[in-house]
Image 1 (cartoon, rainbow, N blue to C red):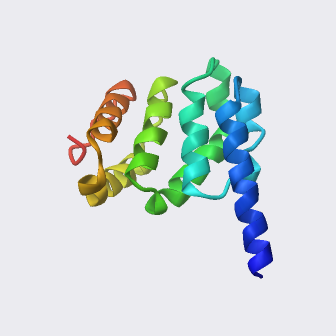
Image 2: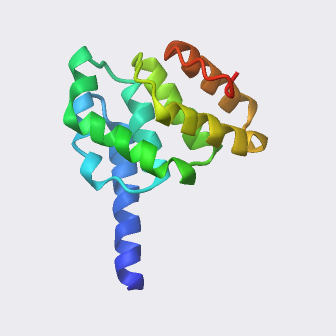
Length: 138
């Protein structure tokens, strides 16, 4: 069982490196079905904000699956993963509000003492870009 765990962990590290090196949306979204942890999920979202993204990307089933992973795993995200995920979504002008935005607010409040100034700045910038106006966030 330890060997399986180590193998899975190594695969997540490989995916992390692959995503960081990605220069297009297709490369990033090709990894989505294998992503498991907060770090690789947040890296994928953040990296989307660094590559050219078309309007159709936000309708791509793999992007929607990535968002679902983000929402599902959000309770396990640290301050950096929250900030990086939101920064990526803000960079692509994602505007899908809903219950997940309230979850982000709650997680941000729970972890605010962990946020470095750059995390706070990235989070606020992203919320403005996404036009999130959750009272708890402000």
